[in-house]
Length: 273
Ligand SMILES: NC(=O)c1ccc[n+]([C@@H]2O[C@H](COP(=O)([O-])OP(=O)(O)OC[C@H]3O[C@@H](n4cnc5c(N)ncnc54)[C@H](O)[C@@H]3O)[C@@H](O)[C@H]2O)c1
Image 1: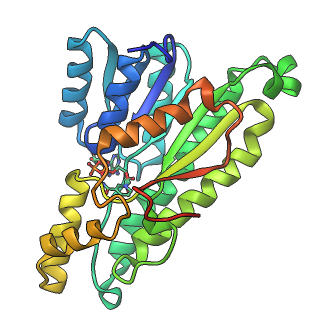
Image 2: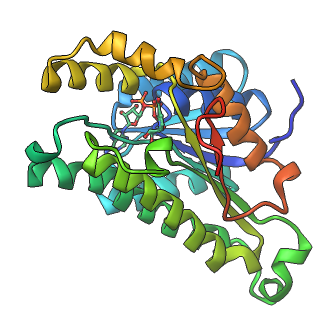
């Protein structure tokens, strides 16, 4: 495998599971040093250990994105370990599928705090660090010099249009598209690129959770419903975490130096906007 990310210091939030895990493994296999950050620190450790066993560089870090001080500590840890932060992938997230009329304030706050507020402050703190790494005299023409950082956020096809059963989740994923654009506009002149992807169906623990929620809240055969949903995807199949990682790593690579503020649907053709 090519070493596109040799000497790059990275953080992957939600790196203990699903898409984040596939991203952490792929970045590391291509030469990056990866801080695998997750609230499930046992899972993060397993991923970091797998990377180390393969001869790569990784450490695990326990982070709760609902705690802004934790986000600061995560960035400082990456800088302490790798000397700098070059790449950040914000994959951590929570889903809950439930009837619109049954969403409680607590449900709403939890999903918004992790998916929207957590992503917003990960972006703010990562951009601050990447900016601080550019010598002040070079900031004026930083974008033309070189790329000074890459950030990729996880939105969703649920962020492209509303979802009757995901009042909070769909709104947070739409917010991730907006946050991506705002950060891209704020930091494009410094050569810090911020993009996002929208997956459709990837059979991770989150997807299993979604199935379980639907079965519980709506009393439907959620597995059958899921297969019917997948049949509506033009490619007639779910995506894999590795396919998400491939698109994310493109956006993290120098091949995407002139791409910023974009949200790429990686969804088998489900959305086309
Ligand atoms: N799987 C899909 O079909 C799908 C579709 C569209 C979008 N997405 C998005 O992709 C991203 C990754 O999803 P996934 O399917 O890999 O899910 P996953 O559940 O496998 O992984 C998410 C990770 O986030 C971590 N996490 C949750 N709350 C956290 C918190 N407060 N602080 C730190 N970490 C926390 C979890 O511990 C978990 O390891 C999510 O943002 C999700 O919304 C997934």
